[in-house]
Length: 116
Image (cartoon, rainbow, N blue to C red; front, top):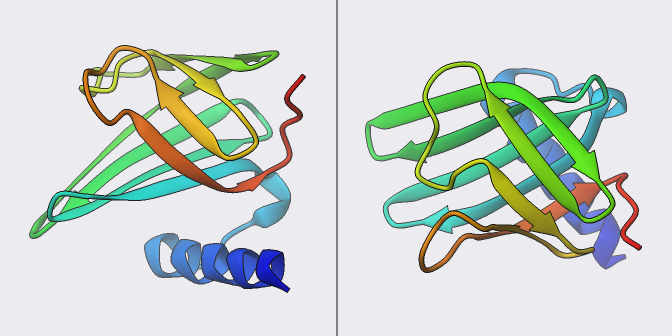
């Protein structure tokens, strides 16, 4: 029941952000509340990703390609690099960015990735 509630929450969040979500093409969705906003990460089947920082009156989206190996992700951004950096580890519950001091964790809400 709890998983169903989480999936419904993810669907509602994605629908409010970008129209109708195509869950078949998403392999990972994670987010967390940030000071005065939200952080969202979506990785798609074709290895593209979107990292979004939304706040009061502001929104910034970084896009690129993600290379996933075992329990790590290397992000290759198209343009600038956000403060979280280019490297992260993941578990069943969290993405943990390595290049940021402090809270670099975001909670995984939906994932088709397998951890070893």
